[in-house]
Each structure stands twice: as structure tokens, then as C-alpha cells.
Amino acid sequence: MRGTLVTVLAALALAAGAGAQRAQDPPMDRLRWLAGCWELQRGERVTLEMWMPPAGGLMLGASRTVVAGAVRETELLRIEGRPDGLVYIAVPSGQRETVFTAAAVTDSGFTVANPTHDFPQRIIYRRRGADSLIARIEGPGRDGGVRGIDFPMRRVRCEVF
Image (cartoon, rainbow, N blue to C red):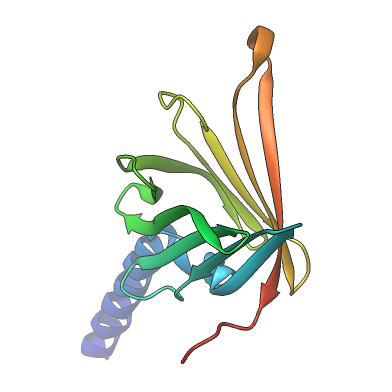
């Protein structure tokens, strides 16, 4: 009987430790909805953003903007789970990488911030239903205000050849 009690207590202690560990794990699975392809069309300007599903504490993404048949912008993206939380890493065309730290993560969106970056200082992704999202960048504006730009995107089929 004593051996059974010790085994049960040990199992409860391990479960409590695992629960505490899960609570500290980066909430990568809450971003699973982002996986796939997203498109923004404004006239001849088409932006396609693609995200791999989370695996191994990492989501990889890439974005390409084409205007009238010519590539105008590209961006490599990563969302990494680290011991202290999620980080969003952006490498826009011709620039160095910038790291943004997660400020909020929910099942329907996330906000990352880097107050030392020039622009943007905040990036916000908000899920709108199953087939659309709004990505928003924010930073310093005129007269000490906030400047923001919205990028409404719709889910599209990922083309694989």
C-alpha cells in the first residue's frame, strides 16, 4: 500500500511539474491558424504571405509583393518559441533582421513589439474568421502620435508545383 501511495504521489508531482512546464511553454500552437497562404490585392499590387505550420518551436514565413509583374519587396519571417516567450523575426528585403517580442498571444491573434526599432515598433496579426486576417504595423507618427498601416489578407490556396 505504501509503495502505491508513493507511486501516486510521484505521478502527481510529475504531472504538476509537467503542467507548470506547459504553462511556461511558448504558445506556438495558438498560432496554428496562421499556417498557410494569405493574399492582399490592391490594384496591380499583390502580396502573398506564406507560413509553415508550427513544428519544433518554429514557424517559418515568407512574403513577396509583386507590382505589375515585377517583385518590389520580399521578407523572410520566423516565429520562434524561446524559454522567455515567443519572438517574431523579420528580415525585409535589403535590411538586417529585427526581433520583436510577443506582447500578447491569443487564439485569434498576436502582438509583437520592439520599442527600439524605428518603424514599425509593433506588429499585430488579428484573425477574422477562418479565411481572413488583418496584419497591422504601428510606430511613431507625426507630432508624437501613432502611425498605423493595415494589411487585410484573405486565405488562398498555396500553389505547389
